[in-house]
Image (cartoon, rainbow, N blue to C red; front, side):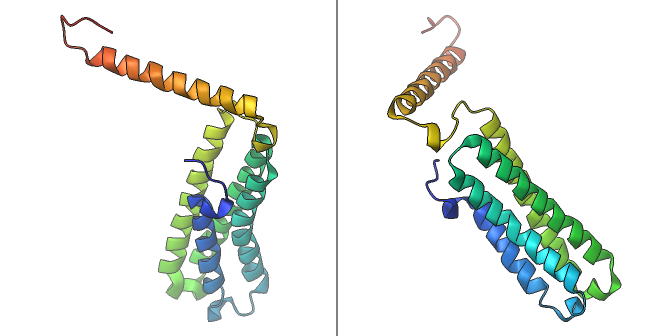
Length: 165
């Protein structure tokens, strides 16, 4: 599926959910007087979705990859700070929410990694470089690969003694 807007990306939506939930978490009374931890956690959580959005809007695959790795780093930063919160006694009553947020940030990190891996193996340099000719060439290549894959599937499924296609 091709996404035309970053708002439609499932990973961006998960990142926005992470930021929303982090902002709600740090509103808890235990974060009072711990402004540095609170602010850093908010900034890191916000950075995940913002970097996904910025990379998506840049127009080149290489820039998107760069910002995806920034976003992944921010997700790791959120997770690291949540680990710290989970170890501090004044956050004991928040252990369940902290655990859920660690899981969400880890899921986001895995999604970003999978997306980045697929982009690194792509021949497309990005929207900024897509002319009509290159777009047609990519479509032709995709259709040819699908044809050969279907042909291989049919050959593999041919019964013994049946002629192969």
